[in-house]
Length: 116
Image 1 (tube, one colour):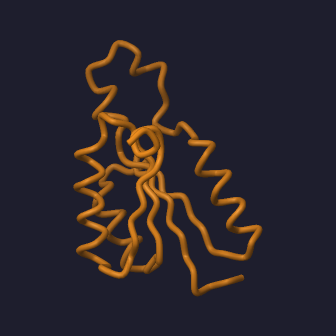
Image 2 (cartoon, rainbow, N blue to C red):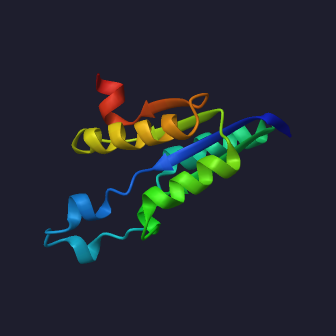
C-alpha cells in the first residue's frame, strides 16, 4: 500500500440542515451512501493508496469527529462532495481542515463544483 498518500473523502453533515423541517424527513436516511465516493475510494485502494470515507451525517458531534480524524490520520487530500445549498458549510469545514493541517489539500466536488 502506498502509505505516503492518504485521501479522506468527507460527507458533510447536511441531513439536519436540509431535512430538519421537511415533511419527508422520515423517508430520508442519515446513512445514505454516496456511490461516487465509494467508487473513487475503491479505485484508489485498488491502486494501492489509502482512502477513507468519513460520513459526518452519522455523527452527533461532526466537527469534533472531523478534528480528531484530521489530527490522527494527517490526510494529504480531503475531498468534500457537496451541492449548492451546502456551500457555506463547505467553507466552514474547509477552513477547519486547513487550520488543523495546512498541508492538506482540500478538493471540492459534486454537482456545485462541477457546474461552476
